[in-house]
Figure 1 (spheres, rainbow, N blue to C red):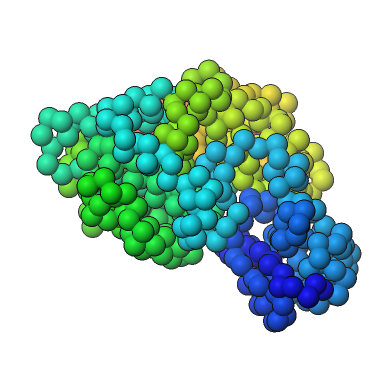
Figure 2: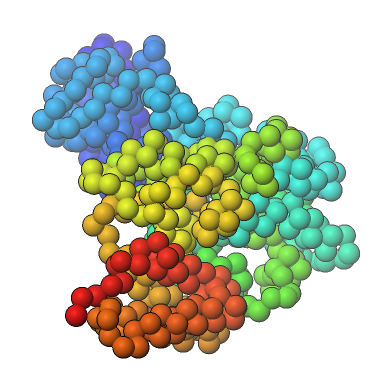
Length: 523
């Protein structure tokens, strides 16, 4: 070990803590010449806890470190950045982390600072280019800020894909027409299976979100904002609240944002565990203190949102893209992507996958490259059989259909959707009839109950799939059960108030289309 103090970074992200990062940090802190600092995760979740040691060559990484292995690693030269491998403890020597191929091939825009500093170190955030977008936006006319967003082609990253600039323009026009109160609300109710980018960014780099929301607020004239965070994310809630306090003390939030004379106050509100509150109007109902329940549209939230006032409602990943758009210009952001899908997307690789985590890339990258090249195929080593894109209401695609580019229109043409960028991989052991049933059951449990097609249709859908699976393939009338299931799917798609019921048929139909053999039952 060197005589000088060694600076060692250990992630404080909840995914790293779940596999022992706190214990590793404590074991390292016991050495008098070691200074332990806590950063957000780099996003390579299969390598957590990923310990990084500062050296003249850069930060040297050691993956899969355990508290029990620390003493041996230190004796072997870890604190000097030596290529130590502890086979018995399954510790991997990563080398210079910034040069790792999995990180180096990304186009990190929203994740540019993730994992580089302590989450609420505001000086480090500014040194890394933070607040540049807010500073520039405050020098522009609000209409020009909106036009930068329109030029960028940024679309809602929460799943709907609505053009962000158009939404902000609608709210700004409402202000110009005399609206007295305007709000900004961030949807951090990340409930889709296989999605965790919102959590990782809010835990590891919260100022990016705060900057994006401050740009929105000072542009459209909002003085109050809310971050609606799911209750299952206590670490994110704590980090965001601390970040808000720090940003307020430094003048980036509060009564005088960055000396502009414009006020913007921000609060974190915690949800009560309802999946439906990921839908924007249900979230607004919950923020107002009522039961999370979908509102009929029109009116849209941009005109009548929180307490009947014009409201900018965006997902965390949408707000996180805004600082780069304003700092570098809308055209620079629009230069990335494919077709009408501009910019980058934070893809989340999950399920039975060898290398799971968050991977930011230009939209248009193929699903096959994400699953097989970047994700490394299945963790089990068995062949990939199905991949679900876009959360629990997204379509299942077989392995021979993975050439599809990851773009809004391109996925729609393939019968799928981008959603929140979640990708869940299954190997050949999966029962696709069971997955179709799960989609209907999930909807029946999580439906707000306001509309009949969603509430009743999903319940009848579960029953119908059970009857199909219990009926031998040669039995009379079995074909009529599939006709009934398709009728239910059509009714839910066309008659539901929101995407909860409207999209539930997508995984069901895709499972039947691509994996019909799983619905066959012998006599």
